[in-house]
Image 1 (cartoon, rainbow, N blue to C red):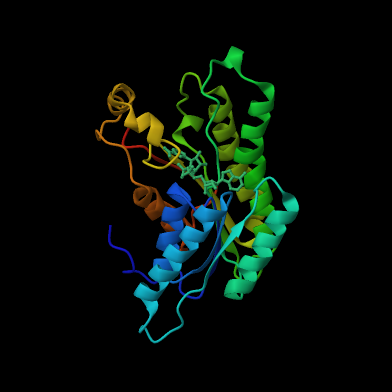
Image 2 (image 1 turned 90 degrees about the vertical axis):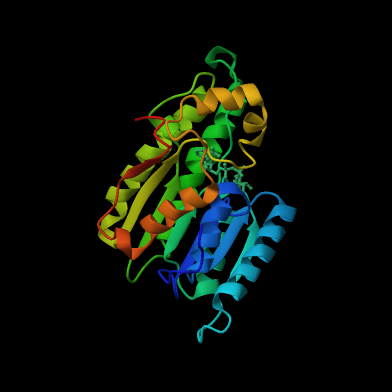
Length: 265
Ligand code: NAD
């Protein structure tokens, strides 16, 4: 997919949780390529450092010689379930760009992969904590800083919010909650001019799914339910995230966009 051909985020500031890997990194690449200053948050120091290096190089390649400044990029190791850490990350993102306009909340974890009756209650609580409460904390920390001119928040949910998968009660429930959180935040933040939407991907090739997709029998089962006959790339999800985050989506709030190759059609 062509990057750097748009200018939709010139002079904008963005925070991307889960920006060190998979869908979040894809979104961060697109935001930087289109001019945003981006701060990525992830859990693993090496992955955050690698993402920071990659995004800085991308910013240089896309913007050096453009006549304007090269977008700033930074990375932070933080846990999205830690309110103080999320406040610090949002403050740093605001300082990086001189304003905060976009949140992409892509940090998330997989379910335990067990029948509902076998689920460990502690693991269930952790999945809900990261996949739901983590979205709220990131949204609170950024929305407080999105003042003049409003902003846009994109929560990464899943098509599992609408079409559940067997053996993933924890993950399914967390993604259903993520969609209703996006809709609720859309109502509460509309008076501040902040739009909130969710993206609901089907299977995307990322570190989260690589074990499933590497198993030929599992891959065949997955592809058998996807009319387009393939899984998505992170860039295909990032394109929709960037659209929702941009002024092109100025009248879209409280929506959940399914991006699943037709799986739930
Ligand atoms: P990934 O494992 O590649 O990336 C997850 C990111 O979240 C990493 O950057 C990781 O550091 C971060 N993260 C996880 N827990 C964190 C925590 N407590 N604090 C801070 N950061 C944390 O996975 P991915 O596939 O890119 O998933 C991103 C989002 O997309 C998740 O919410 C996932 O549920 C959702 N999703 C993925 C798929 C798919 O098929 N890959 C499909 C639908 C939805």
